[in-house]
Structures are given as structure tokens and as C-alpha cells.
Image (cartoon, rainbow, N blue to C red):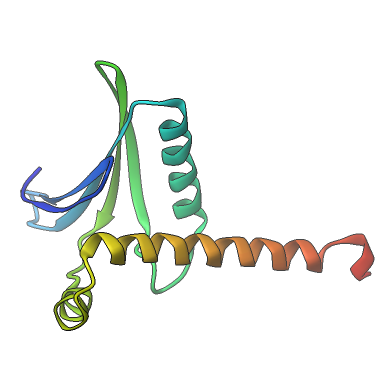
Length: 127
């Protein structure tokens, strides 16, 4: 893996490059040291696989690696420049970590609202 692009409490995002065709990728490494952390990582993978929206970078794949006392989740994404986030960050002094948290919350909210909409649509009382 190459240069670190971002870092959070229990995860880091790195640049990766396919030497065969020079394609760029973003690899998110999540370190899961607790059952709660492991559950969060599994939920994130599940949510990302279920997402199909043009504004959400699709998950290309993931791998779990056992390390000393933790599991490491590696999530593979197409690399997309975040120039719009960087521009907003500079102009409004929003940190990348804050932007990432906001993106995660909005992604989860979108997924849950979609699920609730489907549940309401298919509930026995709506027939």
C-alpha cells in the first residue's frame, strides 16, 4: 500500500496502485480489536454492498486478515479524487474526519430510510 490518504480512530485509508495497468485504488484498513468493532466492520461491509447510488463509491471487495489480537478488515474501492471535499474543507474549515463521519451518517440514513420505505410498502396494513 502507498501513501496514507486519511486516518480515523480505528481505520486508515491508503492509496494502492495496480502495477499491471497503473489503476489507482483506495484501501480502507479497519482494525477490529473488540466484538463491537468487528460487528461495526461487518455492518459497514453489508451496508456498502447493499448501496447502489451514483454518489456512493461502490465497494469492490474486502478481505479479513487475522493479526495478533485483532482482525484487520481491508475494503477496496476505486480511487476518486476528493477535490470537492478538499475545497470545502479549506473554505469552511471542515476536517476530513468530520466530512467522512458526515458521509457515513448520511449513507446509513439513506439506507435505513430506504429499508423503512420498503417495510411500509410491504406491510400487511398497506394492502
